[in-house]
Image (cartoon, rainbow over all chains, first blue to last red; front, side, top):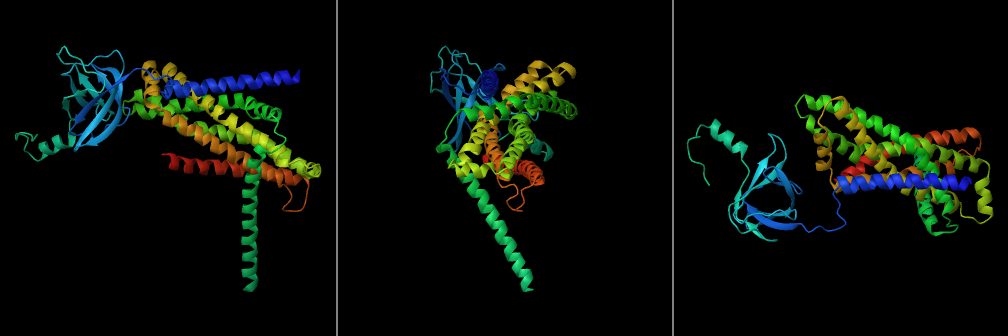
Length: 152
Length: 261
């Protein structure tokens, strides 16, 4: 009888422990056991300073995926964006890197295009905008050549 | 002069032998996993002792830690007008640091001291010698079940501690101080990644080994150094075990963090 109660206690403990561990890893840690059919699209930027892996990808402020990989290719940054299935991105969509608030995290924002054709898995977003370079803006303001056109 | 050198050398040799004995003890403890009597029932009993009975203590500790993190974090973040970060602050500090460390310290205080005293009393009662006489490996019989049970329990207790702490912070931050519930929970979901959870698990596994190693070692060799097997040796061994393993856990925490980051 004592053995029975002890087993019950241990079982309960293990159950709650594994539930907590599962909550932490699946809900918070985004571990996926079943591969969802998300798809990847590529985008090259001239500068992605401050962007991290797993940063959000949003369209109209709604999260539609995350940055999967950041690589260097031909002196430009090649991003692999993991987009949720069911979200369609037009071929002429514009990807830009923005900052949440003044000191917030960088994220990739995609503004929809007007084309009728949609990107397939592995497709490339051609139109990209690098993040706003705050330091550059400030220095142009401070050193007084704000009127000069910005070099591309 | 030569006596000074002699005593210095003798001291060094004693300490070196002491270190070697600790290392051998760890080796025997791990070897015990493969040796008879490989029964599962002692492990279940130890899980009951280490895990189930520490459950409520850890729950309380975690709830109040989470609550105080919520309170402190709120007042610090409110200065910058970024209360929305409260969730990620509480969750990250709990999952990466406080969860593993606090649960290891609580388990050391609750179970490690008891284990050390238990084995120490077996030592001064010559029960361990009796086991050796009967050709039963005292490591496999006494210590390995504790090691296995602690390796199972501590990660689970840590996970429990994290979850309870995050909701403790939720209660204070959202219900009491008026942070928006969406901002808190979204901060938690956004900022925690699998690497953080993984780091917590690795830490708790390391702490489990360290704690069992030091606590049972101190008990196993209680009185052997002094050659005097009185009850005060057990009490001294228990105190040493708790102090040394707590300090080692905190120092090890720094090491593991610097390796994993």
